[in-house]
Length: 147
Image 1: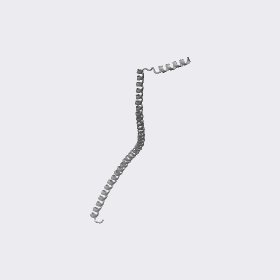
Image 2 (image 1 turned 180 degrees about the horizontal axis):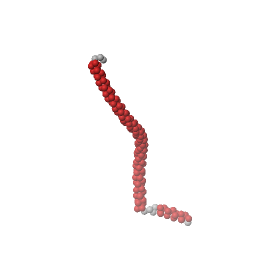
Image 3 (image 1 turned 90 degrees about the vertical axis):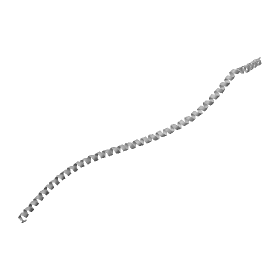
Image 4 (image 1 turned 45 degrees about the horizontal axis):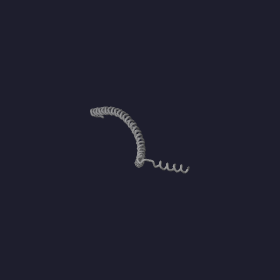
């Protein structure tokens, strides 16, 4: 009897196992094919995204290097600008001092010229007086003929 139950059990498992309807089987098969196609599509997308990611990483690296280069250039230009600004300020201060010294020198020179012109004028007057005195002495000498 046990054998009979065993035989019924095995037979029922075999029968119920193959009890999937054809419509359901076709639907499941279609779903399986659709899932496989979707997997292939997603694999292709993944490959495309990996390639895009690699390109973007290269772009980021390139831009990072360029930004570093620009930063270094900016620092160098800033240093050069500050150096030139200091040189300009020093030059401006020297120029202002030169202008001040030039003004002082010109004022002193003008004063010396005025003093020299007064002395020259006085000397001219003295020479004219001496010339008159010499003329008058000559006249006296000629008038008296004894000089």
